[in-house]
Image (tube, rainbow, N blue to C red):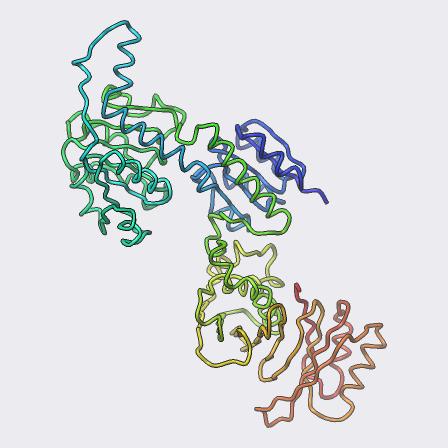
Length: 532
């Protein structure tokens, strides 16, 4: 079946060349919410820039959507919460416009310092007013950078080359990283504000950063500070900034992004435009950056539609390649043992406990936790994947815990999943004996060594003669072959109980299960389906 991808906004056509290898790709202009909602249902992927607002209405209309790609860094034009609930991956291109955005930031800072736009306007009028446009040097001034991702780091490097001192505030980076780049680390904004001659913003727009620069924070800054924002509109309270410029607390601002784009005339900054450098969201507007972000996001969309992983999923940070790589060989095992545990368990799930042993106890197993949750919900909830599995657990009030055990194991790594419900407690354990060799090693109190396969029968029973024969008779009478069988005793029980584990080539009907459960001594047979 051919996948379909919709590309809106002005995105470089190289994206179509990349995606077109695997899918049908349609280019359409920027549409209204209603127009896009009426069309999106037939598409498996959507690729946009900043003009298209991907709202909850559009996302819920996209019944086939698997991935939304933003050809750029910011994703505040996409309803991430709605996408996550619907299990849709959202990706961006965090590196594609790094150089373009950093260069524009530096250009804006220098233009502001030397009054370049204002001087140019007088030259256009045939005037020569040198004395009117005396500027200031950036040399030996202090540049404060808020947000120290790749763009912020690149700005810091250029600023240092210009002889500036750089200080950094970013609660998500480390002091060591900042100091390795010869900048000064500030642990709090209280420490940061008063030191800066220039402040440049490089954070995403989040609940924490909206109106980060406001009347209160501006009053804590050094008098005469200059502010540059080439990140996202809304991080600065524009009315408060305009007032501060009029009062002289801020000597000028260079702004590329606005609260209400593209309605620039609604911005309060229009009242103090002579002290500002204003540009229409040009940070990523270079030929090179447009190609880079288009190619980057197109490759991720193509990879996901072909069954692979996205490297820059913004609503799936736990599955980034650097986190996934150490545990990727265990992901299938984690999903299979949790699928089995969930299908054995009866009642409403209250908690899921994951225990890892062996080499897994020494590393970050966050992706394994997500794989387990996906497995738990696979046959209980419709439309579950790595994106929304943790959210489903949270919404249902399911307690999820991970335990790292130092217990020695005879295999490379072991994963155990315990599901507690309103009625029972179920444990399934699996192990990787060698690379790509997996076994289910425990089912409740029964020690086993079973290869996970798509169709399995679990038949707890009393350990007495003819049980295997009676089971095999019913299985054979219903035209079902037995690929392999194991019988294991419960060594801890005094009730002489055993379990048969059968690998079979097809699904099992409820009618067959009922016949098996009518055998004297059989206790609640279970048909288990695994996504091997």
